[in-house]
Length: 284
Image (tube, rainbow, N blue to C red; front, side, top):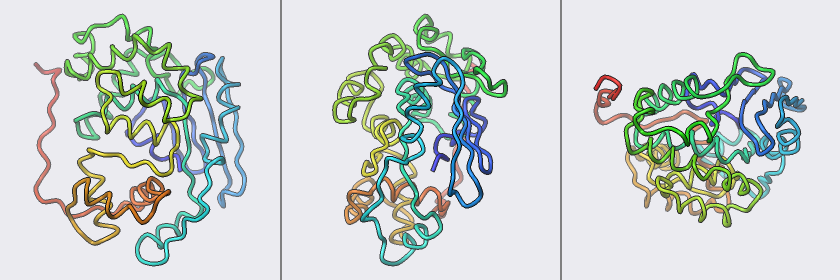
């Protein structure tokens, strides 16, 4: 299930189409592009990589595609979750291993709507990312050495306010040491990442799920996930983190697998009120 890597609509680093997934990223060996294609019944997958990071990406492709994830023991007995598992049989949790790409992408998503995050990420990549090797339709995420030279004022023009801009630039300045964490366990890597400004429980949970592919992690502090989980699992329109954790507890060690199925199902509780207007700081 690679949809979460294309969750920001218009992401210049990713293309997801029926039977195909392409992602441009930065690896410890340099920029690279991974293309995965599969047949209609998902019985076979072909992977091709290009760029200086091609070998690094190819070696880790099974991990990205979830082939190293084991859903054994996950067997919902009844209810909506069983139906979701039937519709997405054998859904795997993949791991990108691309620490800098995932961290930058996640910082941009902090405390803003999905629509605003998508627009800001697209502007950031377009302004500061390079063309992807062998994939002219994509761009690479901004290199950390590029962002490390900037101030928050430079990022104001892509829509990032001072707080997120400073977090992003601060992470970029130590990105060289972050790359070494890609092959560490999340229990080793995340304490180091959590020492950075801007990496709180929500960001750490996202990275544990996406970068390291932990099938049991739970992402705390999200405005929408608890209520989505409660709506699907219990028919409750509103929930907080504590209620979400209680509902997910019986599904250990597959709690993130449940989250992916809930999101893939697309069932959302009714809204209580219209969403607030979007705020673009570039106008100020």
